[in-house]
Length: 179
Length: 180
Image 1: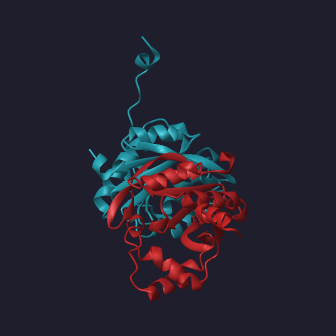
Image 2: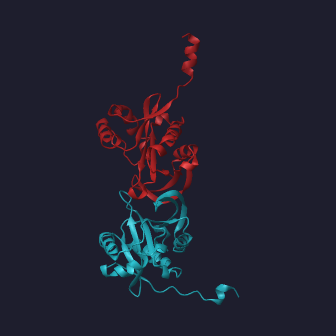
Image 3: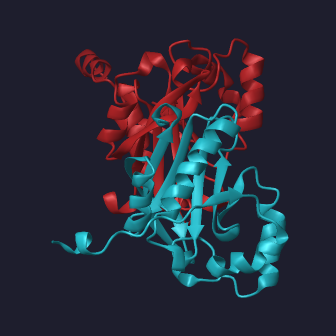
């Protein structure tokens, strides 16, 4: 009997997506203040909840599609869909972040699946969802693949992350890929 | 010059590709490719029909462009090449575009122009670490130009851009300084 058979894989908790409210700031800090989570993000971890509140107010609340990933209505992460600028409204990019204690339970994959479905239903003309993951972030690459995204290639020195330009793996999920 | 020397000079095709900034007086040359139905299908712009419109386009877009050059053959513009920085988020990256008048296709001019750009752009643009180019899947000619100039094909981005009203797959190419 191998290790996997001896230890049953824990079930993914039920997750829901909802819009953020200002009172979510403390929950928000549980991932936004954590350097393990912000490692592959452009921003540094937040120290001050006041800054987090400002971010929720100016960026999250007015955002075209930004949701809290919730367990029992408590946010444990966030996921957002950002339509491309200009003419290419058929295209949008997904980003997500999860509090460290909730990693490895299938939550991000489930949040992505819910988001894919909602995005294609709610965003007019959407045909392509894309996501990029740092080449040194295999966990995120696996999450995207499990959610049904297809790897398209490695874009070299594609984005600047904390002063260094990084190679990123580009993934897409097309409206025709939807099950 | 005796007859023999002048014959030799005429048969040796003088073929020098240079880049320089555009001036409004280039409008007649610009109009040649801007009005060419063989060229515009590969680009998002519609074929220009009026020279005044090309002049307006040059005033509004070409002359103020942060990095755009006339591709000159023996001193005369036969096309254009440009490098456009991405947004504030992606300062390390810029996109390459170029157009050549159709009567000059197939003569290696685009490849030379791209090579000239590669020689200077990383010095010219502070912080630039990636030059990319997106090419329609069916634009095999342009893919060959980029490959000859040393660009790396990174993959095909499906349904990436809207081109002439149609959502199109684009091939992504890049060149980074380490490729030299």
